[in-house]
Image 1 (spheres, protein in one colour):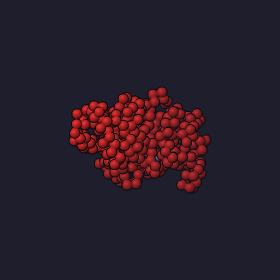
Image 2 (cartoon, protein in one colour):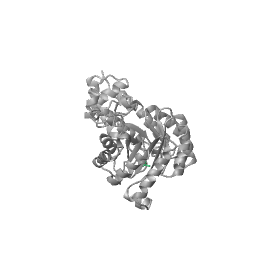
Image 3 (cartoon, protein in one colour):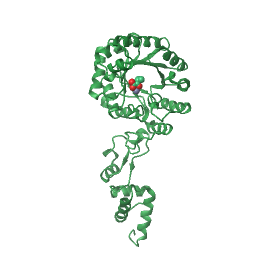
Image 4 (cartoon, helix red, strand yellow):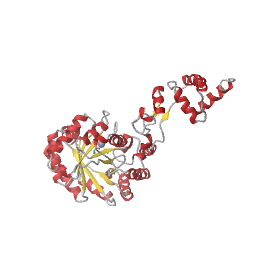
Length: 390
Ligand code: KIV
Ligand code: ZN
């Protein structure tokens, strides 16, 4: 199972919704799920059904609504969790149960106060139990990022034998370096019996700002699913950002990896999630931030006006942004002023531009940004100076 398609597993509605203060109601979750299906994600993790009656009901309604994507529900390695998830997923066209347990030394010792052997037993039992309800069972080895590779391989070999179809390798604490995470995936591919029959999945957190880099290194080393969220939202510093991994794979055809995401819907989807969660996107966020296609220094503006590719590696239309923005500030040059003035109706000669630019700099030094209204005021004021614009 090693073709070039990377499955996109969206967990905005589960790991993403764990952000404090960003809880969504059922109606909002349904609207987002419908949009994710349209966007082309392969899997929607709709929630953690046993966690609350509200979450159960959301997973159930999403299962009824979604037509294309697999709908997935999270569980712990506990029979009751698995039964409840199966119940919530019963209307899904393509249901998946996502079960698992912590495998790192710290989880085994402090969370479970148990032994490695007992963890393997529980992992096998949960996977086999989930298999009674659905064909598609994903197993997560929580804190796999800090789990010893040999022990991780042992656990995974056993859950494959118990019927797991997807193996999730979460860097739960966002600790791994890209080389380390990539090497882990490679090690598992080379040392786990039966691995060729399942999909390896990257689930990376962003505590050190490495979630995207780790996920990409994971797929370069043979993983074929990335778990991610819109705008990179999620616990603490967040999860891998969906829009980033999708555009990295698209912008680097030499990697020979692709997704089925309709990238033109990325910007709108980002706005939708940001608005419904009441969580603003940082302006300098890659791909979907307000400044991702905005140019404010004179040198860059001059280049972009001559040819967009001088300072942009992505055509904004590819991610659903109408056009690049030329932002007028005190760092802008004449080319930018002429460009923006033309957009609001003033075709300036060289002489007119010289005069206008002088007034523009006075305004720009007084305020952070010069907007369209300011351009009209500047033009009015200089026309008043007798004859200068003749
Ligand atoms: O980060 C993590 O380990 C998780 C698992 C529950 C999949 O979110
Ligand atoms: Zn997570």
